[in-house]
Image (cartoon, rainbow, N blue to C red):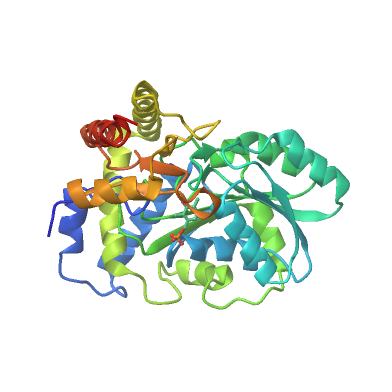
Length: 362
Ligand SMILES: *Cc1c(COP(=O)(O)O)cnc(C)c1O
């Protein structure tokens, strides 16, 4: 297989110890060996989430935990506000609608972060909103949201705040407990340096109170089942054993460095990427950029889709295209998790050359 340099915002590259862990013989999950790993992993994940709240692992892609953050806490026709500043905010809205919730969308211009005042405006107008759904890093635009302020505003109006931190976790600072974020969801294939297949959710006491009366239908993503199984360090259904074993390896790596340093290094790589992009004469798309990825506007006279294809086919460098209304208009370079500066630098020098080649003589 041709060598690939993966700079996409999920999946991201795997460190060697993760690949080694995934290649080991499988163990059975109803054993003390597995239970010890499971316990260790959940505790270590709490450090990454910056929480002491209950935390659960599902076998699913990130969207599974998004669905869990809805079905476990609400009843049909409950009123929710969903901040939509890109593709993943849209997804929260779609899940809420699919379950028959009274869903108020708060649209934000793509590329911008939701102003906390816009949220308080909506919450003032619509009484009895039970929950606000927000995104830490909106991966489709590269924007990072001010989750601390959005949480305050939600609480001021009696709503809980749920955050999709699937790409933002371990890239953008998220202080779950000190900011009082009620529910946080994430996934394995972004900054946690694992293959896709695990999703995570943390739940605080206030959210558990809501869970008691929640009547939306649920089965696989029922958190009460997960909570009961956890008493025996078990899961309600067969866990993705190799992924959990591999997760222990990445969590060791993260713990060794510490969250402060993880965020700092990611911020530095993000900053240097943005600087280099600007130096090439390209424009940044996100007004409030995330540490996880950089969204770049496709310059005039360049076919954005073709540019992404050229990087892939000619060099094996994988950046991501624009999604939805941004298809062909931006491309996205991830710099979270195990992605290295030298890979970004190589990508940028190839970009410089390809863009120069396309535009020379125009
Ligand atoms: C990747 C991602 C998701 C989840 O997508 P899955 O394909 O279900 O893993 C959700 N939200 C954000 C912000 C993401 O970056």
